[in-house]
Length: 450
Image (cartoon, rainbow, N blue to C red; front, side, top):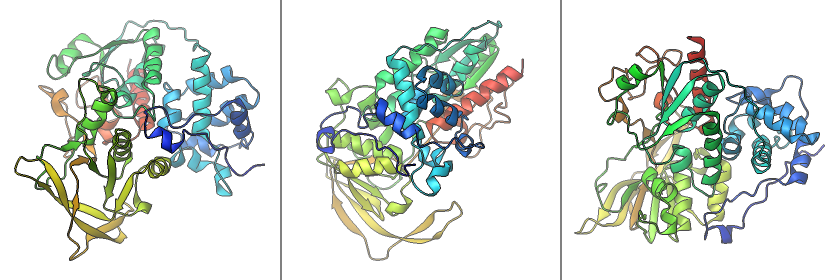
């Protein structure tokens, strides 16, 4: 049996830096069947335990082998509301695939690629999930249309609840729409997945900033239950001199303009283009911002204070970034942004770093290297240093927050009766699948509280 996974075809790097089309092209029928044949169908499947939403992975892979893709889709849909999305953006290498027995002596089964194959086939062939809904007369308001809100809505609507989602932006999808680039997650797919929920009866109201146009208390009066899935969209900054310069941006502003507002099409909401750009950070958001700006024709550097081994972004995204010409400035950290008399960015003062012992989080600690201060030239700086919840939603509410500004919950229930919360607003920034897991968990708690 083959120990090497079936490699997915990708768009050539020299071509893709000039477009926003999807980089990975997906499996065809032959490739999917070949990869599915590698599965051992373990009697005690570790991969299922590694999946946050517990998809019955061996079962749907067996269906691929048997050419029963309709059944494969049904198996996945029992656990996942957004399979086309999860198959693309979930860090399977750290979850289900990391638990795969095949990975001990070779490559793990490409579970994410197979999930994407099944979900895409289902969309292209218009498979409809068979759902019989018996209304129970209970109403739920969901604040936020990101992955946690959508997953919560999917489970509740199937179980008879009347569900309304309130979204602050003019398009639904949360981070799926504004945060993840088109070349990793086409927005048409997000729209189609959301459309499935709307066909089931989920109502989505956009351009409604909860906390301003109406409050959580207003929702408590109008609905039997409320779920807060507002994510963590408020950017963090370095708090260094020069950060108020004209060409210093947060990564999520850059990505929102490019993704949601179509800045790459020269729309009315363009992103300012620099000649030499430094993206500060090493996570997936930093990688997304760097690769997006590269496609706009800029020379892009990614500056991270640790080494390549500690880089938290997905390995695949790092490899794609290297292929696309992103320049990695590792073991370096900015201490000052340099500007001219008109407050335009001209460069940065940077200090070199060295790795120390492993810290309490399991990562190598970092220390400044004495005498290493130097200057780099640039005309744009993008900070991708993490995010925190936006507290606008909590205006005039009694929801208790912890010292980090995250919502405090007990079994997904906040300090307010019948108000639940989950996803990044509770845990801090995490993955799409973790947010979905939280949304489904809250839905289950709501159903158990009847």
